[in-house]
Image (cartoon, rainbow, N blue to C red; front, side):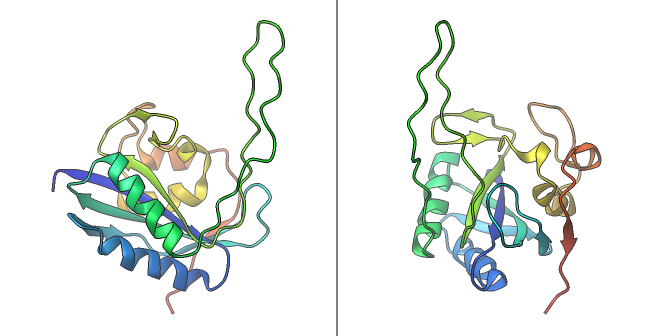
Amino acid sequence: MPHRAFIGVGSNLGDRRANVAEALARMAEIPETRVARTSSLYESEPHGVAKNLFVNMVVELETDLSAVDMLSRLADIEDQMGRKRAKPKAKPAPAAKGKAAKAPAKKDVSRLIDLDILFFNTEVVNTPKLRVPHPEIPRRRFVLMPLAEVAPQLVHPETGLTVSKMLATTEDRKRVVLMPPR
């Protein structure tokens, strides 16, 4: 299997551990894909408007699928598990003369399940539907801690920093703790 993908998994609604376990089982069923490694589970303080603590992990997949096809499969899993997608309420504000219009900021909200492609090989993808590496990686301790557990020497293709270095230098001070096994 030629591609290596790292997937961020999170849940802060319902039985969070069970949601993460179900998502992992469903990822293992994606055709032409196998689960290579998984991190431990971590509990983290939410960012944005979400109120409940999240359970997070990182999954390393080996796959023959493209990044776009993997994104589609992950969105299918989220939909099948009942994820409700936030719809933008406001249209972009009109641009001031000589300035680009700004889209409304997307707020971090509570989610039954969230599956994000963090890295896909060393590819850099920047389309309206997919950005790889995920743009928030350096600013999210809840992603960096489990990612450092499974791939500490993985190098970010845009910054040139390893996951370990990004974890050591992130400005995110939100609490993230290793969860005990059940």
